[in-house]
Amino acid sequence: MKTIVLKFGGTSVGSIERISAVAKIIREAKKEAFPIVVVSAMSGETDRLINLANEIHENPPKREFDALISTGEKVSAALLAMSLNKIDVPSKSYSAAQISMRTTSQFSKAKIINIDFTRIEEAIQNNFVPVITGFQGITDDGDVTTLGRGGSDTTAVALAAAMKSLRCDIYTDVDGIYTTDPNVVPEAKKLDRITMEEMLELSGQGAKVMQVRAVEFANKYKVPVRVLSSFTSGAGTLISLEEPDMDTMEKAVVSGIAFQKDQSKFTFQGVKDSPGIASSILGPIAAEGIEVDVIIQNISNDGKTDFTFTVSSTDRKTVEAICNDQLQDLDYDNLLIDNNVGKVSIVGVGMRTHAGIASRAFQALARASINISMISTSEIKITLVINVDDVNNAVQVLHSEFELEK
Ligand code: ADP
Ligand code: ASP
Ligand code: MG
Image (cartoon, rainbow, N blue to C red; front, side):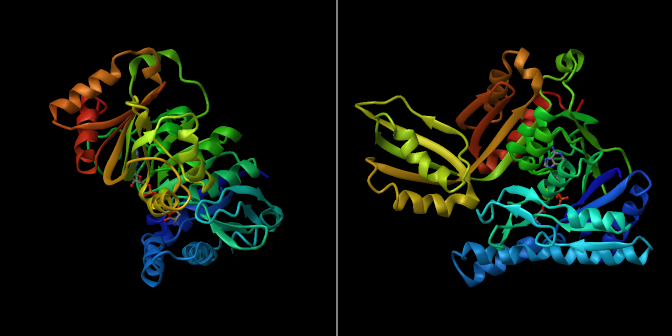
């Protein structure tokens, strides 16, 4: 039987009224293909649980932390299944444990390894719409894990890949993917399509409309994904699996701007410049599953250099602990930690064939008196590290510099 995965985010299931509205969307979708539903916790719930954990323990045990913050999804899944039954759409909710959604054992950053879809198939055969908790998994030992903030997107795309579904529809509070966050730049333009490659960069650089791991899954298993609103009707944005044609590439040099505010910058000043320095600093951090982003090593002076990198603020405490414990023997003068940093990234496949995008961006920011502290580039992306207070302004300035509203 043909299936379609429908994922509903926090605001889409944020109240009893919203859950009832979502049930009707599912009933409609059932006319196209058999729905497999994935839900997030009701909006604000995961934050509430995280705050509770932090109130009770300054560094909560990771296993218990995940056991706690995964509970919100059980509530919304069961409520939505009830709501579906009420409108005569037979439905059953399932937790990650009930469908053996196996993950690695890195709590709060777990990766999906395998899904046993016997129970999902059984439900479908008996005409029950399965409503599955997003964001959570279980280890081989049966412990509950979570997939990182925004992880329900990944649950949904992974299920669509495993079930070879027609498509994965990500229902959220905006009506598609925009040139940048429409809540920051009201002039942002909705895109009808975006390439997988661009979406990978936008999500990777902080556009939280989809978790980057979800986009990676979609790319790897060639799952067509659509992002659309559960509040208003409309076709949303299709993340296209096809290569863009040259016409659109020539037209849109920059397709979007992403940003991230919650960043921490670590600088080791006066590190001895010898082979293996980067790996001795970054190795232990990578071993914790922490993603290190912009990395800069300065030209050395007297055999010493400065080594700087950024991580997400959620990883700050762990990185600090690594610096104090595992990097004790590292030879350096000072360690500076700056928590007031943010990142802005310009993304576009068209940048590949156009020179001068970076200098245009630098000039526009200079005119707005925004200071750039780090720069990193790839073929289709330029990332700038700036003061966190300048992020919104920088996004606006760059959005209008590249005329993305047009
Ligand atoms: P959900 O709870 O449905 O998963 P999220 O809050 O995780 O929703 O993601 C949707 C939000 O992503 C939007 O409200 C918007 O503020 C933000 N966002 C960031 N970048 C973009 C973008 N380029 N296009 C659309 N939304 C974006
Ligand atoms: N509820 C989780 C979170 O707030 C997962 C998700 O929304 O996708 O991060
Ligand atoms: Mg989300």
